[in-house]
Image (cartoon, rainbow, N blue to C red; front, top):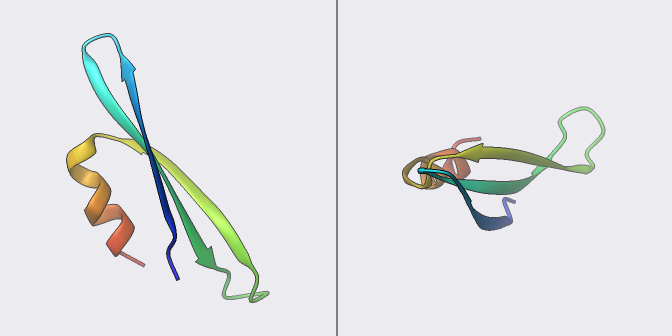
Length: 50
């Protein structure tokens, strides 16, 4: 149920990645989008956890 979209961001000397994950809301059953900006090496861990 996680659809991923990853974009690379570069600010100064840091390289960051914005990841967007679609998750199902436990209350309503509808889908919501969760966004996070992080280092590229943490993206797969973030997308795999629920």
